[in-house]
Image 1 (cartoon, helix red, strand yellow):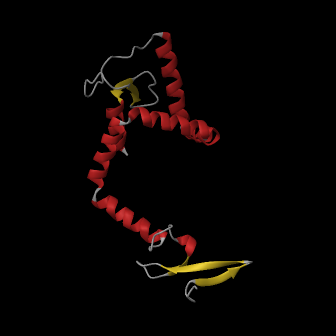
Image 2 (cartoon, rainbow, N blue to C red; image 1 turned 60 degrees about the vertical axis):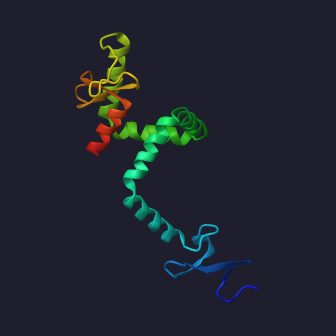
Image 3 (cartoon, helix red, strand yellow; image 1 turned 135 degrees about the vertical axis):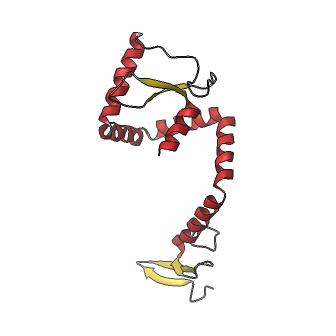
Length: 164
């Protein structure tokens, strides 16, 4: 038997069950809660954000270690996702290309010069001198399409993280 606080309004032939959040004490519909949680989704989200801010360095280090040790699994997962969500992926790429025409033009000119042999890819990253990782060509200025800095994926990611 349900108490009167558990039964809410009826919606058509279906009753909306109400539940009280143990954190904010608001009376909310049951779909505002994760299954098995006493706190509403909004409170859970706030708790998660606070935890992330307090433990950001540990979380980032763990993720970096995980991705380094599970690289092949991550690549396979990414490929499966792109295959399963082909249309959305194409729309995302199309939107980026439309919003960054100068970058697209620089990338196209660069790829052509690389294939034509006008540019050669070095064996090592110009920052860390690492030859183990995949090398990316980084454009400092898209108006100079053939003026690139060769960086390993790690250095390239860090460079963009610092700039953003």
